[in-house]
Image (tube, rainbow, N blue to C red; front, side, top):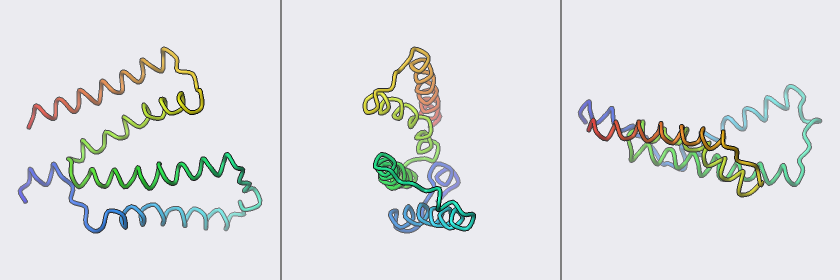
Length: 130
């Protein structure tokens, strides 16, 4: 593999699902253990809405989101895979409006446009340099 190829692609070893599982499970176990050690268990109260929110974050935020990111790292340059960090807030705004009926102001639309414009500029400049 030449140096240009190494710079454009990050080769991830092992099974994508095992990698994602370990990298999500280990910090979760450590944080739960730390919470138990410092005495946070009596303050833990899980409601139905809280449980559903937690389930959503586990499935979509961690399992699906991280596995997708690792998959992208295998098949795309790291700079392209990292654009999720710019696009995720836009998706969150849309889902908040769609599911929770959160308002979208002119300021929010301008901010989203700036974010998407920045991502587009970065991606177009990288495509021109190839």
